[in-house]
Each structure stands twice: as structure tokens, then as C-alpha cells.
Length: 173
Image 1 (tube, rainbow, N blue to C red):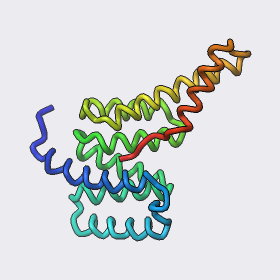
Image 2 (image 1 turned 135 degrees about the vertical axis):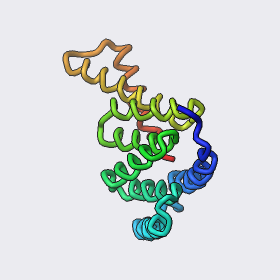
Image 3 (image 1 turned 90 degrees about the vertical axis):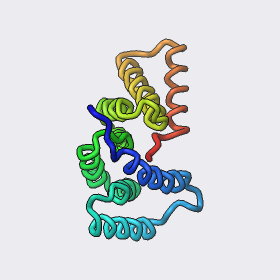
Image 4 (image 1 turned 60 degrees about the vertical axis):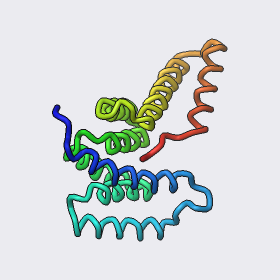
């Protein structure tokens, strides 16, 4: 696939949107209220209505929809962006998050691998891929445990993996 000449122009706004998302994801007292998220969503939707080609605003709409737990709508937004701009890794990263949130771990893995084919240096997608692999391992070990007791070393490994997963969720961008 030939390089996209507009890629730098598209990435800069997405990185700006990512900064907003990272600030929100850090949570604490700065975490937006549902009313603030709705206001942000309305603002972003107005931006998209005024300029439907604004990838940054379209991406932000998807992010806010994720924050509002409106996952089906967010998925549709990110899939549209991924189809229109297949070279961008960020929509694929968020598609993976939505798949993982819904328990579709294989689909999440595939989306993250797509993001990494688009940008092998995409650190967040690489981190999330490791997380999904760990989730898949836990799922396999739990299935093994359902057929009978696990040996003690594997039981400790399973418990450690569960603790790791609980300590840090997948990250959106």
C-alpha cells in the first residue's frame, strides 16, 4: 500500500484528541461527569456536522461515546474511521478495546494486530495486545480449571495474572 500523503495531517489532530482522552482516563476528581461528557459529545458532533471530514472530531465523538458506555455507537464511529483511514492505528486500538469490553478477545487481538501493522511503533496498541494475550491466557487456564483442579504452580500463575489484569485495564486513545 503506498504511503498516505495526508497521514501527518490526520495524525496530528488524533494525537491532540488522544491527549484529551489520556487526561480523562487518569480519572480522579478530574474525571468528567456524565453531563460534561454529554456537552463534549454535543460539541464534537457540531464539529463533525460543520466539517464531516474532520477526523479529529469524529474520533473524539467515538471516544466520548465510549466514556458514556454507548459502545455500539462508538464501535460504529471507529469502524467508519478505520474504513476511511485504514492506515491509522488509533481507531483499531479503540475497536479492540470495545471488543475486549464485550468479551470478544479474539476480535480484540485481531484489531490490535491490525493497528500494529499500520504502525509497528504504536506503544499503546502493543501494550494492549500484551494485555489481551494475558486475558486469553487467563481464559484458557480458567477453562482448564473447570475440568479439574490445577496444579499449585499453575493456580498461583492464574491468580497472579488475574491480579495483573485487575491492576491496569486496557487503555484507550
